[in-house]
Amino acid sequence: MRTTIDRRRFIAAGASLMIGSAARSALPVIRQSPKARIIIDNDFAGDPDGLIALAHQLATKAARLVLITTSALDAKLAALGGQPAGATAAAGKQAAIDLMQIMGLTNLCPVIVGSEQFGVAGAQASAAARAIVAEAMRDDPLPLFFTCGGPLTNLAQALQLEPAIADRMTLVWIGGADYPQGGTEYNLSTDLEAARAVIERSRMPIWQIPAGAYRQLQMSVAEMTATLRPMSPATAWLYGRYADLPPFVQLGGAITLGDSPMVLLTSVSAESSASSIIAGRRLLDDSRYGAEIPGRSIRLFTQLDARLALADFLALMHPRRD
Image 1 (cartoon, rainbow, N blue to C red):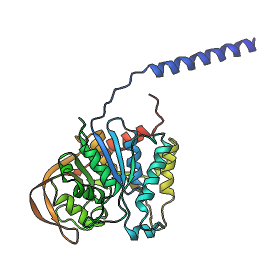
Image 2 (image 1 turned 90 degrees about the vertical axis):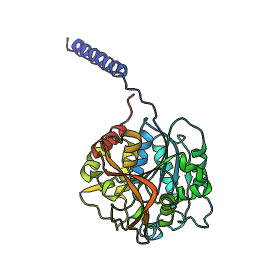
Image 3 (image 1 turned 90 degrees about the horizontal axis):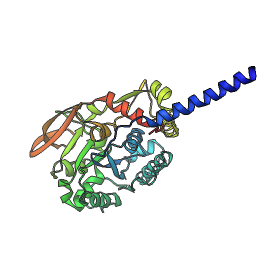
Image 4 (image 1 turned 45 degrees about the horizontal axis):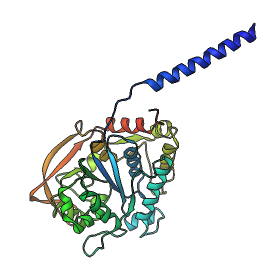
């Protein structure tokens, strides 16, 4: 009798699992269509927050990632991290490819190495600059965003190669200190010449996320350890990048995911973040903001919907069930 009961229970349990699985597979899924094309440009060999943003962008269905370009690290920063100068843009390409392989998205879009040198004057256009121009000049009904989480080197070189791209895409840039004073900020100050070329001498529409805004996206180390790390092989890999930071980086209770606003604003929603249109300003030699530039405007984001950005990222990092 016990054998019969156990068999019945086993059969019932199996049937329940099959029904549950069928019910889950039959659940409706909200259809999403890409609303924009995205070029993502970043110094992926540096702070891992660039790779967090890349993983988010790779996973979303709300935009179409068409190109990844990589930029260099400042030579002093590279040396502190034990990386050889002159090879950090190439190292960034490898990091991006490694992440794409783990996520099973190796063939999603090209990954092109940008310039290993900063500046625009006399610079030969990099492969990244040429790829940016090619995508910008291609006819497509979807609007194009150039999202940049590092210095503007590759974009400035692309503009020098083909100024007409200024009318064909919008820059979403993580960079610059807060207004009205300004001052030293890594993404701006590392290649001030490139920033001047884009902001002062082009008419490309700009959405700027300065330091005071991008620092609003924080994840506690405890949450990253308990929630993000065990989700998938990709999140374990991302967590490992933070666990292997150079000794000069001292983490406290939280980590700034400062490049994630690029994904929030272009691929999730910009409606719940606060912005205003301001006059663009000239960039002084010490990275402070100078006089207003006649006819130049910038959409400045000052308050970001951090909850929406982080919730979307974490949801997308779960293994897909649809």
